[in-house]
Length: 197
Image (cartoon, rainbow, N blue to C red; front, top):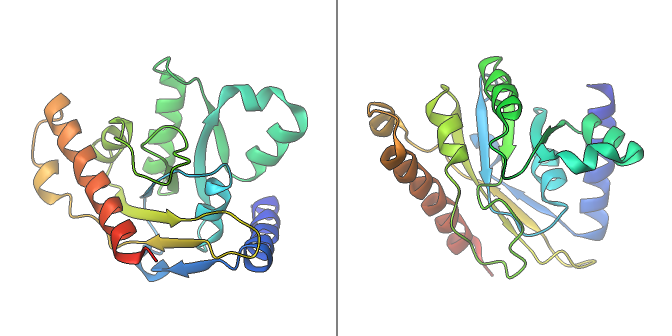
């Protein structure tokens, strides 16, 4: 974790000095046990922001193509990323994700699947719901409010854990996955609305 701590410290400096970042709600992150940070996605810097805001190490999926570029591969691996083949139902990445949660780690995930440069929240994919329902992970909604402009504030809000009790009592099928996904996106939307300028 040595490299991770170094890079997290570096990004904390960058976000503090160049982006005047504000971090809200870190007390909502459990100190141990599996956690899913479920966030909106507006910029390539979002994973670094998401991981820099808390003390626990955060693991991320990253598109497999990035791992073919030597320097980038080293950097993102040290920052907790693992490869996923997008649009291919990557079973290896699914197994890795579930193993990360089974071992009690923190997973950062962006259910929209790609950046929304407009800042508006798009529809979420059901992958995050599958990971949540196939594990005992605590799901934390996260809102990132930009824009990422030099010396302009960027805010990250970690919300209260989402109550999964009722959904986890249901059979895991497409309807349940959709219901859970909509719940996650609703919570993210609420955070964005509550904290917008």
